Length: 174
Length: 442
Image 1 (cartoon, helix red, strand yellow):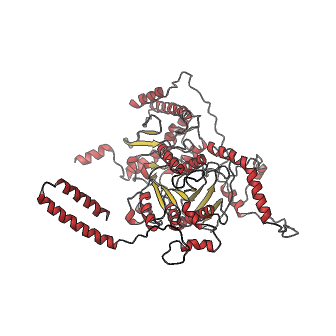
Image 2 (cartoon, each protein chain N blue to C red; image 1 turned 45 degrees about the horizontal axis):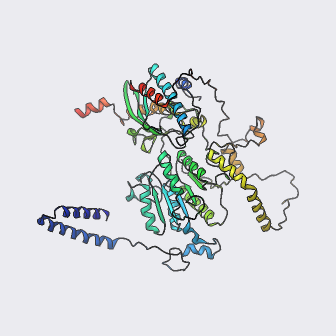
Image 3 (tube, rainbow over the protein chains, first blue to last red; image 1 turned 120 degrees about the horizontal axis):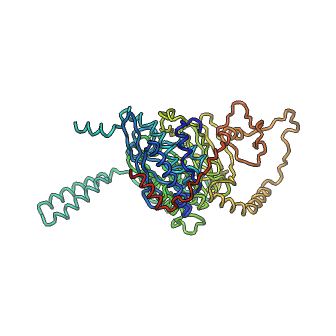
């Protein structure tokens, strides 16, 4: 973990760790895991809100909890950029991490696989692998998505690949 | 041609609708006539498709698509080549390696191919073999079926356009492997071999999971991101290491967010490396399925040095995959009988080749150390708890000059006290969901 900024590090230590190693095909054990996922997500969201660092909404899109959808946003130069966020829980979860997708950015950056899957290979996958099964969705957002947004959004904005929604509407009106 | 046929259907439709209106009818019929003429011309210029062949013949004539393959029997390489028509191979990932492997097996006259991929053909794929620019936009499975059925109509093709790592895709994957309609009396699953030609860890783990559960032998293949090396690996559940037994190196590099910025995901690829790896993969497949030669348990390819390391990997008794552990247990039960059979065979074969030291004296205490040992030192941290030198003693941890370990020494995971927030937390999944929704609402 050396190399991570102290903020991320201290946030991370406050997200509850998970204990059940179970994937979506594991029946009752998956339900237990899902409860742990919820607890970690609730704790993380509460923490973000109380630190005035709220930056995502995520909820299960099906009763089995295998597909998740929501939004995430990043503030750059005092402007808020918001993106749809979605991912599936893979069958081999938690041995493999969920592949976080930002479909609206598909094709706009090199640091992304087809379908808008963000690249997590270098900065996140090793951590996930070492901490299996203790890390869950909340950790993936904290250590996978957050640094990706912090690195990519400024570049995307500066290069003109994405525009702020107010900008976009004002240009279309004029 | 397809466009023409579609137009013709449209015309027919409009005729149907204008039946009570005779003025329209004549012009519609004229239009149809011209389309049929156009189609006839197209059909004349279309390439000839060969008809299916009932039996593989060894007859040496220009028109026999299998004469050169059947010659393998005459040359004493393969006992019964025609057996290939009973065999089914599943190929997961129809990319640079998978598509070429599929073409090779098709040309070899394999009985049945199952193809899995969810991607579409792109212009960016054109630096590799097999797909053609006019196929851009088609799903890889459709484009492959099109080409392969033209090359050899004898092969039964089944294609699945889906992602096998999702819950639903995985179930379809499993049931397609179980399906025995092609050869109902086959033992085990419905396929003889699964070839993994995917480009990511998640999909490999999914193939591994399915094959461990089905006790299905499979081969893994891969080409490095820099396009200059690759490997193939044979995985027999319980007998050899599964993919989760020895996970690929994951190096926690402790990255600074800012350094993560602009290196790009776009992996390099070369038609050469991918062709070589596909060739190695299918060669190993043929040897395994048609029982000839030595089947490599692992074969690496380093194109910069033309180095081909081979090695064997035994299963990890502490593998994290439950199905793998089950297969290991089953294998241990049948192992003594198998070993005895192999020993008996070896003894009868190698009757009496006197084995003595090649050189009587060895003044300088020279030993031959396989290249592979050095290679493994370089890339694999050996997980073997019977190895005495690795336990603790730091002196033996020193590596020869020039070698570095890729894996960090085991991190002590800082034990964070698991503070179970006072037992009164919600333990009902609906309650938890509502709680998160409430947080999401504002």
